[in-house]
Length: 122
Image (cartoon, rainbow, N blue to C red; front, side, top):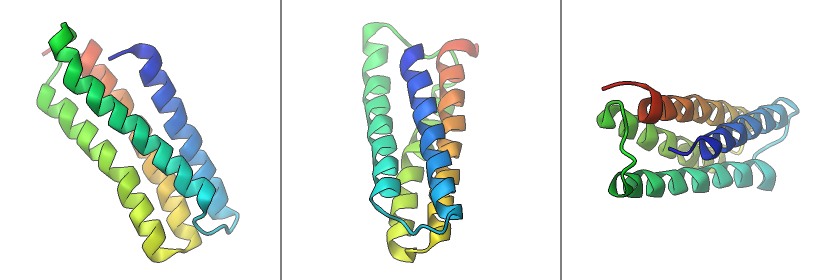
């Protein structure tokens, strides 16, 4: 995977996470900013899925376990969507905090995906 894309994705996930946690602790309910930030994170994860599908065909294969990589990637892609759905169902301030925690989990998973793709030996 491309290092700058991974760094940008991790930075985005951390910013979204801190933003949502801050909004939730400030008493804000899910709004356009928090849901939009999670939706942006979801779009970046969709782009990563497309890159991960295409990369092996152009000679950039993972060095670690492909099953572990895809497990992290699919789980990371489900988390923002689950957070958004729960925010629409719950509409409480704590659902925004949960979205933030999920975004931080995506940051950790994205780092782990990068390690599996580039650093970790099979």
